[in-house]
Length: 410
Image 1 (cartoon, rainbow, N blue to C red):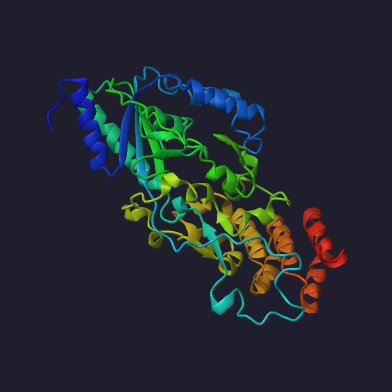
Image 2 (tube, rainbow, N blue to C red):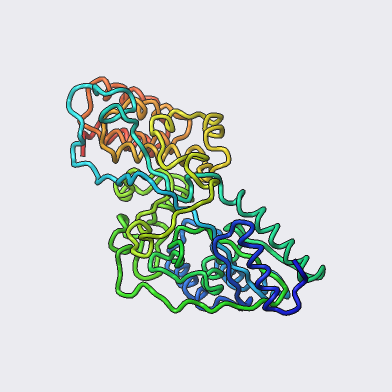
């Protein structure tokens, strides 16, 4: 590839190199501050919508919205996207079980950890996490593209890459580079692949030809806002992260608020509801990157009994190289317990009883809650729970066991 003689030629060559590396979307923008995005995010911080994420401070927000502060001398942003949406089997998130659960007064008759027809009790995984960890796939490609940029523009070029780990607001970079527009669910909606796209960016000291921003919006559609089971979407581009299923099952540490547990359904990692109902995601091309296929990673759903049985070594071995290590073992087992309770199937009882012996209090707490959703329970199960209660020292776990054993069923 010949050395470019103009900014337009350089930009075209960089875009061609990005596509050769496997990026489905690429665009460029001036490295100007993200004034609109900064105002919106700071308002959300003031309203407490990120109260569970202590690292999102006004100072960090201002830094994340100022490309030149992140790379002194930055002139351009290269916005990039890789599609990841593989077809699924259209598993539905179940409605919360009716009061009293679906179990009878006798012992469960189904195979341990298996529901109707002997199928495993399954917990859903957000699409982006079905395959390998995208950070490990995309970052080397960004580094290679940055190296190519330096080769073309000259050795004095300086670059900085971002793939959801640095402070740059990747959604703002993508919108400014013309990859898509802001959806009401806070996702970037792109023309070719909807919102099922991994976003990344390169800041560079090289001047590149900018792409126009898209002049599209969601119009009067409120499908995502209406569908959110926890009411986390408060309005267009307004998300209370403290109520978001994705936040609760991935970033949140400790106990999930009791009033939100039934609304999580059988999601064990992330949530796709606001994307699944979005008309912009209909009839979009599916991902073609095998790294993100469910066969290569955790898959689209997990066997809840298996997850609840994993020790530390088993957890590491099962999910190494996938995004599901993010909530750590305690968080994922906590989520599996909630999902099992929401499925309302007494086949989960043996696995949940086992989880009452887990060394992590947060796992025991949510297992005790989940068992309550399956009641009325057999006498031997209640006896087992009472035996655990007599030796339990964690107050949150004891409170859940009290509700089940002492105060009776809700």
